[in-house]
Length: 411
Image 1 (cartoon, rainbow, N blue to C red):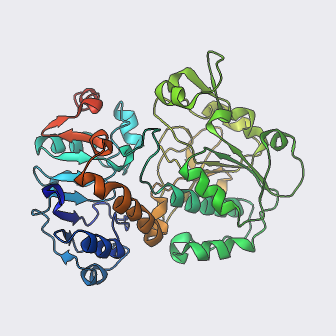
Image 2: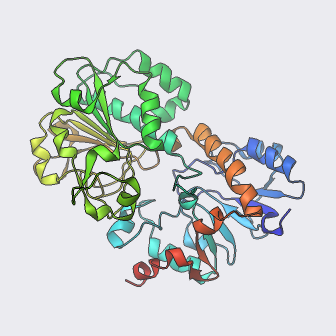
Image 3: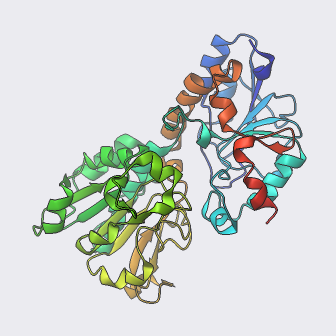
């Protein structure tokens, strides 16, 4: 076994409300069985979804000091002062899409200073491998919490719709803390008159569609959605090819859209006047077009709620002016003045929780860790290129594919 990965450390997450983990106890047991010389150290945590004792029972050492570890794993960004010199770290840094201070503010943990984080990573000569950039040759990600973001985001959005039409809401997802209970909770609900637009075609969208299968909401085509005038609840899934068009009149090409998003304009406003709930679950790049013009918000007369699973602040959904929390998932926007108002003032309801999978932490962490065990650990030992491509920094410098981040940190 390579010396590159003799000892793995699992952090106690810096973010106070983050209860997920990159590896769960069953993964610890599996890895230690497969790699006899491996050692896994887990920092004690009172908020992690699996108790310390379960990790200990699986063979992990429980202690705060991770300095002996070769590679240290977390889920979200780590406080700069906690980073250990010259270590390899893996976590979602939310830095690779940054182009400016504005796009930095839209990404990742609210209040986390990305410049400070990147400066400290370079200063301490840390090797940063970002889960988000671990992709195959078609740019498909090997890892992600997207499926559960879609499931929980859909549940929360439907709950927001029920609240908006003064119907009894379902128990909060984090209280149920079980996908099976989420499915049971939804089956008896009638989402009368719901006309839902669901954007996207990736993991998040597929998670939302998976969950919608347990409701009485039926899927219809884009054309039928615009002309639909019945009371039975329906939804329309708009993939990227439907809600954007090429400014040059060329047919939609996904790879071109990813490389040249400025060449595209949103078409969502053709559909929004007919919807009362928008669930946004699409991929978005800071250079991509916003999905609608906030100045046109008052024209969407039927629209009463937006469930923004993407949760990019002032991003693709311009009404997302801040991230909400698991405990307080909803806020309300005045359609004409575009400012946050009291719930009783009948504004547009917004759900914008930025860590949705944390409402089902055990299941989402288990699925994520399955990917680490199968698609990442073996290639840390014998890289086929995927690890190198996902490495943002090494030995005090940005790697060649990420040198554009110098412009950001020096701005």
